[in-house]
Amino acid sequence: MLRVLCLLRPWRPLRARGCASDGAAGGSEIQVRALAGPDQGITEILMNRPRARNALGNVFVSELLETLAQLREDRQVRVLLFRSGVKGVFCAGADLKEREQMSEAEVGVFVQRLRGLMNDIASSAIMGLIETTRGLLPGAGGTQRLPRCLGVALAKELIFTGRRLSGTEAHALGLVNHAVAQNEEGDAAYHRARALAQEILPQAPIAVRLGKVAIDRGMEVDIASGMAIEGMCYAQNIPTRDRLEGMAAFREKRPPTFVGE
Image (cartoon, rainbow, N blue to C red; front, top):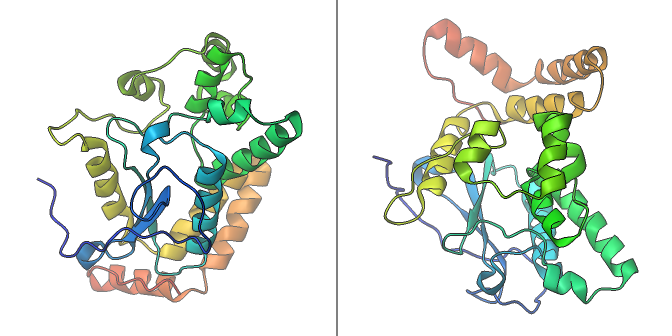
């Protein structure tokens, strides 16, 4: 069984200014909670727009971008979890009802912001697949991320057909890392995600961050350039206290204690 947190802090908005919302708890569609006790360092982002099934609307995207910008500067945050406050739904994709009311210029600006958001959170392209069933071209990166993940032929099939995939189907294709059987509380996916976060939490923060940079940037270039990017990231990690701690812990046969320096 999964262990219980020693302390649960309340959800709170991180935004600096108010905005209309159909979410709960203070009217914020995006809320955050830093876990405590043995899970200190894990921060959860709660997506809470129930009437729109967490669809990506203007307010939702604005709040999420602001929250991510603030958390990016918080050195206490080591692992970030995205969690839905809407039972049975993670995110319904773009808010097409809201988009229908936008001018062409407004749509262009919104999609550009959405594309930036997807880059920030390294989202999958599944949202883009759903859009094709409504006469839209995937605009938040779906035509670029999906071929890189699945290959050109399968990406074309999924985007051209707009086919919806179950979690099991997405897992079989390699779109998601894990698929779990649902539990009575309806939060099995969250518990699996938190268990994975608990595996990442004790690792060296700088090494994890630089590893992410090396992978993300390396995927955009040829392998020789990717090797150069890895070399630059590796060089940045060499002088850190955490690397020395890791070597000392290995030599002394003890668990390392990383501090992110």
